[in-house]
Length: 602
Ligand code: CAO
Image (cartoon, rainbow, N blue to C red; front, side, top):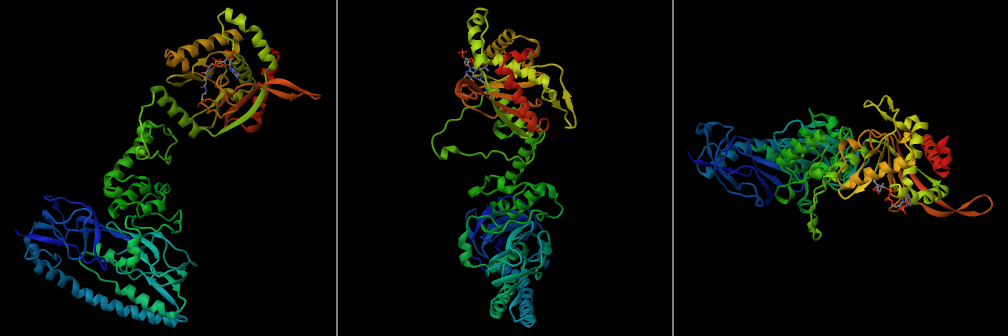
């Protein structure tokens, strides 16, 4: 059984097109029509299929080679020699190269010549029609020879009615399972009518658009040259694709040697609702950025695969040669995305939305070492947990932060007066104990502040207890121990509890149960600094009070400026539960309690 040569088919005008992927290896058994290699030019990506079924005994090309029509790709030992008599099997003879070529040529050329001449005649008739129709200046731009593909999907319309188009400017992008290609305009002028839309299926000869040329002449010859490009061949998937490119200039070829297949940098954005490959769930594709997808570096079959899965090629990093996206890259991207949705985690331990999360972009995996020296240290366990929690809360809760101040001059005087005595009693008296007490009063006065939304978002669960969590900065990360029944405790008791939980948190001795059941949170950066910040609400709570460093400020008392100790308050709340006016009242209430401690007794 002699091995047969599988050659690069007719790929139009192109010479030396780069092999960007070799899809098979020596020893592989291939089916007839199975893609062997992928070629890529600036306007099309195409796969070259095997013309016979059998075993690859030798591969004659490798990735990065440049090939032209007639170059031998591989030697294949055909499974069935009897195929040599089959007229469809153009290389099944298994004899010498010339005879294979001859049979190939004779199989293709005769009808091709006929088709070609018919095309030319058609073109001539159409030009005459165009001439007759008006001033001889409106020409039909048609789908050129695209091999034996019928009903190829228009995945992008790159122009709109009224646009001025250049000759050779891409008008639409077609995508089949074997090729992605742009169809250029055969005439320069104004696009007066678009005859197709994204999602349509088109075949050779279908009219894409009407173009009004500046003069009648150009339309004629261009239309003719476009049709002349038709050259159906047996290896239609490859040759046909290239035919569409035939009308593109060499200049164009040099423009984007490494670019993706289907788009131009300056093309208009595709219509949002138009990218609906047949049979696909269009809702999945709404998150696909068509422009980026078009620019991605991937073969047609990988593009098709990505579209079927609703994966945005523009977001996928290619592991192939020169960053090319492979089918495995798409698979692992989709697998990661599914895992994220199921676990609420993104790759690398970064937090991702739980329960709400589709469509949240993942952090790209950047190699920072390309910019300078780097060192990677793993996040501490607590930081990983809190990162996940704050990310979820940030995404799930519509946050608003209300800023206010409290005049704590008298409070601080009271605290200072009692500080030493408290210390003697083993109590560290800081402003935070008073803030806890004032917040507890607010939770009692504003029941919605002491509530949680039910999971369906339809009701509020009002709590009759008042537990408040306090953010504690520990070496391992942020912890939120809870001080229970704050409303029932005095300042000393609250201060003791605070001291106890914060010390245990810092020493790593806090238990999970110490951090459960909070109704509200306080995050105090007063001992650190700053004037305001926007704390993140801890779901299922609906509010958190941020406290910054107090400062002495001049305050106008009606007749003069007085030095007053002013405490900045930053109250973040869940806007689904608390509206802005209520939030302003809540901060005003807390401010009032802190400004005059006596009101806490009322
Ligand atoms: N303005 C000025 N000084 C303040 C202050 C304020 N708002 N709040 C506290 N202080 C003072 C205290 O009075 C104390 O000074 P004295 O010893 O002279 O009284 C000093 O700052 C240090 O206080 P502290 O931090 O030890 O104690 P605290 O009760 O104020 O806070 C705790 C306890 C656990 C909340 C704090 O140690 C802590 O970890 N804070 C960081 C919280 C955090 O990281 N929040 C951000 C979370 S992300 O949203």
